[in-house]
Image 1 (tube, rainbow, N blue to C red):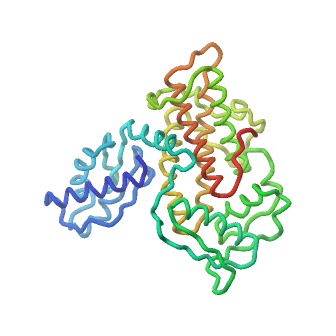
Image 2 (cartoon, helix red, strand yellow):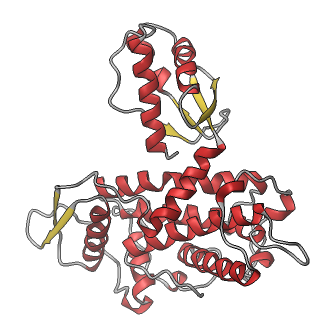
Image 3 (cartoon, helix red, strand yellow):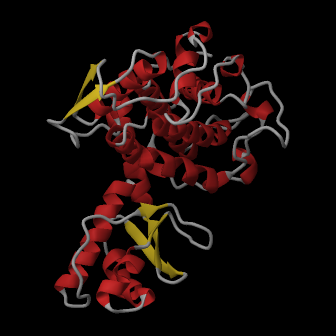
Length: 357
């Protein structure tokens, strides 16, 4: 279940509570569903009870208590807990996680595509400047993924004017140049330097492309070992050591220190959950990048997906004399789903997703 689908589920619970006369409010047009904050629990959380408390004339926690049973009975929801002043913390059933991975595998690189902007024409008026041109090109792809169409013109008044590149990015090569221009927010000054070419953890483009290449490698290696992906046992439990990420384990050949932004050290089910959440959030990120003209949201999301899958990859293949199990097949499904999201996202940014790196 994606955050967008869960948001609709929460709205349905509110509507049922209103229909039953337990809440006297106007059902909102939208509610926000996010990963739990500090003190929260579960897969997702929503502040809808706090949002409705004043119009309902009741304390937020009382509103949450009214909504909890309606939400807990919804398909795909395993349990709902109330924390703090009235946050609803939602635990999804494992089948809901299976559904996310299955959706990605079914749609491949087109996962997250929708018709949300069908029939809409986005007119971009940009200056003759390399960064503006690259942003417009990426937006044409991203808006197209949501069913819309972009027309780019060079005339006043300009409505897309990012901070210009301080120098010609062409010496970086096509892929690194596009990343250097797209990864920062349009109002931020891009850095045009060789840091985008180094093959180490501190380079987010390298992490994204390396993570994709690794997902392709484990699929090839799994085929050599005679097994394929299967989501049936996605709720596996693994020893923490099995999923612990280290540079040596995945063969990056670099070392990290406290001063270097590092990959997460989550292990076991925590790493799986982090990656599942990132995959589930991909359609929302695409929709926001299209509607708000912010390709950098997609670029930064790909870094999150890459870091998530790199933490899971060391446990995908059997070790030593170990035989492939249902858990290995489930991890492979998760890795292949992440690889599809990375490839699709890079394609929308106009960047190559190599099978070998």
